Length: 139
Image: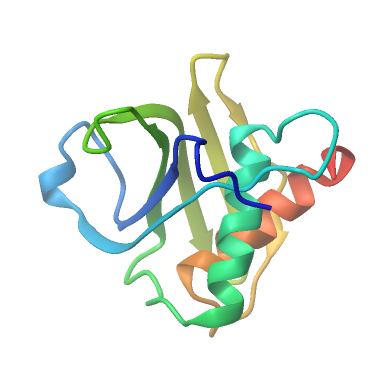
């Protein structure tokens, strides 16, 4: 359920490994939306991102990464609607059917468990598999 007053979550996926310079990466896709539970506690940024990405994956295909690394930036749009406050970054490594991500935020960095992916999975499908497997206790 979306809340029209809630700040939009922004999920931006870039091809390549992020080393501090976003201009060196090719943009794969950008998704914006707001998803809230019907009742209870709000979703964490990773839970909300998973739900937004699942909705996107059901409606359209996105490109596959060209290499083994891609980067996902998760942020929240502010009141100006042009400024995005960074919340989480996923540094994804996907090679030979196995994918893992380093999760970087204000909390200590952590690595996800490895997940399997199919050769024809696009970037969004791979991120969904990583988040689904690593947030299973939160769903």
